[in-house]
Length: 263
Image (tube, rainbow, N blue to C red; front, side, top):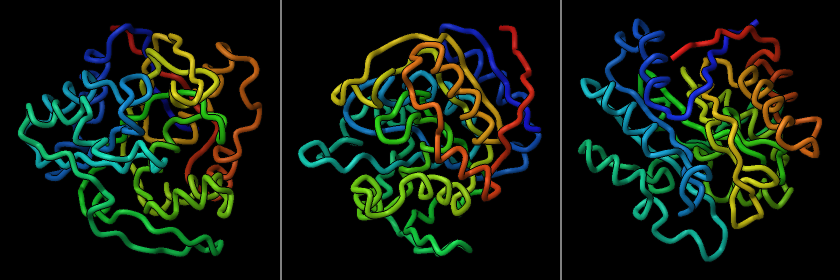
């Protein structure tokens, strides 16, 4: 059974600080840290990671060698200069940290024991510690986008296209990414969310859960997050295939215990 931390809050800063305190020992042992925000498109939060979350984290980790990077959506017509125009780049600039476009860096192709082949960024695995900053929200193709789905940004453009086109199984792909590129800590933002879809341009509707969630097990985090989203939108998919598959192949456990943080 995995432990997840939750707090009912209306801003991210206090929760981020508390979580970093909880995991301080592991973080202190590391020199290089990779931070993976959620930069899907030019849409602001809650489609993408809240700049305040990234700012709070970079401030707390100012003594570390930090790399921030992502690979954005590859839809025709919206891919130009997404990272460069992101509010998250302004945060990185403030801290004198480069926001890396993972598509422009080296990638590696791996084949799992189950025969599933993917090409992903090598950069996260070159760092001592990885922190993922997803936003919990609905997703038209996958049911939900949360801890597991945020690692989709590590994929090559061609793999993303093939999965969205259903040529490759997207649910298996999401799970397999989380074995190839392992994450040490997830800080999931559910203060604001989207129902119906993962972006406003796709029909996503803004809503509030006023909750932050964190932990080391993305399966447990997404299982809990799915239940939160169901309270807002009972029509959301009842069965989240990538969560089930990730559990089956050993990414994490569905069972969890909640440690509530009072801020």
